[in-house]
Image 1 (cartoon, one colour):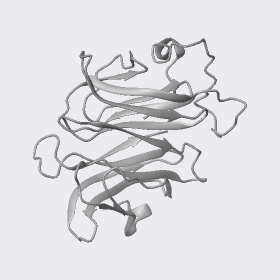
Image 2 (image 1 turned 90 degrees about the horizontal axis):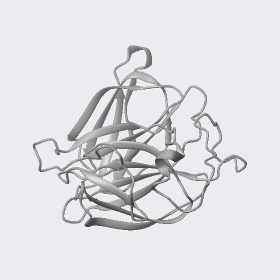
Image 3 (image 1 turned 120 degrees about the horizontal axis):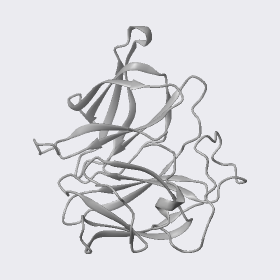
Image 4 (image 1 turned 60 degrees about the horizontal axis):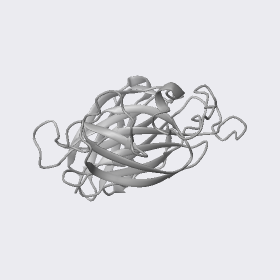
Length: 242
C-alpha cells in the first residue's frame, strides 16, 4: 500500500461536501506536523475470502474506479476527517453487504479491511503508524484476518547469510481481528514467516524469501480459511504501507 494519496480529482466523489485543499505530502517525514495536514488518509484492503468483487461506498458514493477483489489493496485516499459512513456492495450492486460509521482524525492514516465472509462481511478500521522507522531499520506488524481462526503466533527466521538470525516470535496470541503494534526489524533479502496456532509448534502457513527494505513499513496478515483448499485457503499475505 503506497502512501501517495489520490489527487482530489479522483477523491472528490468520495466526499463531495465543500472544496478542500488536500495538503498531505507523501514525502513528509513527520505525519504529526499539524501545519501541513488537513485531511486523513485511508486505504482499503479486500480480506473477505469467497466474497467476490466488491464496490466501496462512502457517504453513499462509490469510491473505487477499478476492480476490488480478494487480497486487493487500493492504496491510500485522502478523506475528510470526522465520522463517515462506509459500506461495501457486490460489484455493480446497490444492496449493502456491510456498513459501518468510522471516525477519521485529521493527519492520521488508516487501513479499512473488508473482513469475514458472506452473508455478513464487516469493515475493520486500523490506525497506521507511518512515522519513519529507526535509522537503518524497517517496521512491521501482524494482523489476524482469518475468519473463525484460533489465535496465531507469527515466527520470523532469516536465511540470508549476511544477517542470519535464529527463529523468534514477532508476536503471539493474536485472535481474529487482533493486531500487533509496529515493531522494528532489520532489513534483509530473505525473511521467512511462519504462522503457528498459539500453544502449538505446528506450522499452518508460511511465506518465504520475503525482502524487507530499510526505511519501509509493512503489514503481515493471516488470510483465508483453515478448511479451504482453493485460493481462499489459510495463507500469509504481506503489503507495504509505506
